[in-house]
Length: 286
Image (cartoon, rainbow, N blue to C red):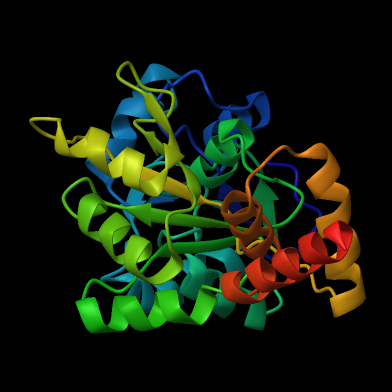
């Protein structure tokens, strides 16, 4: 590649999460022109490279050898070679290997350039039907139950949409833990994104879990999108009375139904709201 720098460049190249056509022209060009491709799984990546007739030399760089491999790759970069880092699917370093390599390369003040493209988190979020203006990516949570529950406790009050990755084997356990800690929130489960059997299940977490329980088996990596904690509205006693009086004349609900509606909306004691409604009703009859 045309490189005006004395050292080579490390390119972080996003690859398809499923459908091989979901790759940018620039990514194909870079993969074909670099001197070396560092891949999470060389056997898996050969399928993609063969599809685009890319014959660049492959070396492995995965979570178990990344630290040991970094010095060798840095030497290649310092000798002027360009290297592309790819993972099995999506963007390297995002719940995939590459972070340690990028950190080591950056410390040497060698150029690291992203070649943007697919990410299951962004693809799934875009069709989830949940708020997209703010989101919190949490990736894979700890597998051990106690650590996972602690991680969920730490984010239960977060208001952005929450994004999790999970294996098909553990997805039902994860949803069960989220239900018990975060409550029955709106959610979307994305499975096999861009592949032949892709599936999107929307609804409350309990509804999604019911649908999964009816399946004989669950296949494919899962991305789970969950509505963040709704911001609680706070009101004082005078505002509560004004809301009750307005709704008594327009909602057509009984005393109990109206108390339940208002208490849930403003996170108030149902008893407090019920007694305030009775007080206002008695005042109207005097």
